[in-house]
View 1 (cartoon, rainbow, N blue to C red):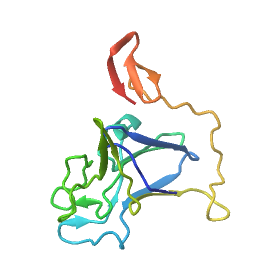
View 2: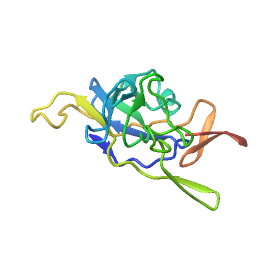
View 3: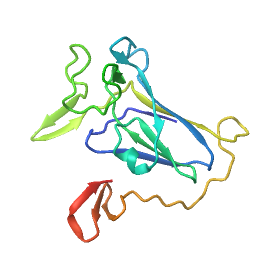
Length: 180
């Protein structure tokens, strides 16, 4: 699976969750193709994601982590990368924001459009997140093992309840909230 043409504000986590058969292993990589990026001493063109312990950690990550639970449910945070690099080598991978300088004299890493106090990111066409699933398959493409049909994923931290698409609050207290 390749996730391309990402256009997402750096302050709004975009979390992708997909159910796979239990026991599936994954390789997740962010890549900026060669036509857009040159790997050199200052900039890297690809980043291999690493697995972490919980889906909540994925949501609050810099965008280069994933989680797989015991049922095979994969959680990945999708972030928008600059069009011409995946990360700056001296700093390592980090979540870019509207204040991150671009490569060379390319202005800002995160292109944007602003009007009337509203700022929107401008999508990038080169970068992609590639998710490779390794599972039992008879055709080399599709997983053949059983996928649970009714798996419920809790998007909120313990003690919080979901009050809207991307917001969780302490039950009964709309002033103590977090982004889901």
